[in-house]
Length: 104
Image (cartoon, rainbow, N blue to C red; front, side, top):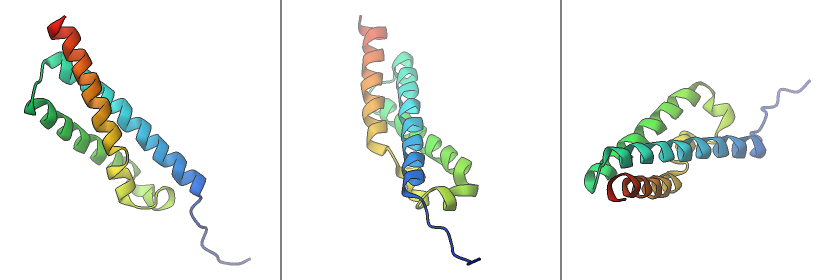
């Protein structure tokens, strides 16, 4: 029986990245709904978005911290995965909900 270190499975790593991606996009949609419903405009909405992105990323990082060596290539995967999709989803939902609540 040899003592070889098992390598990381690329399929498992990609599945975990996809899971983080889905979590962040769903969270962005929820944050966009809240931001639009609260009527946040201009810099207030962007500050809310950045605070929520950091909070969600930190919570996900703390959740996978004990097993990140086995499931991810590095901690940056958890912290920065889906940054731009988060922003785009948030802005889209934020503007739609704000328009529906306050304009129409």
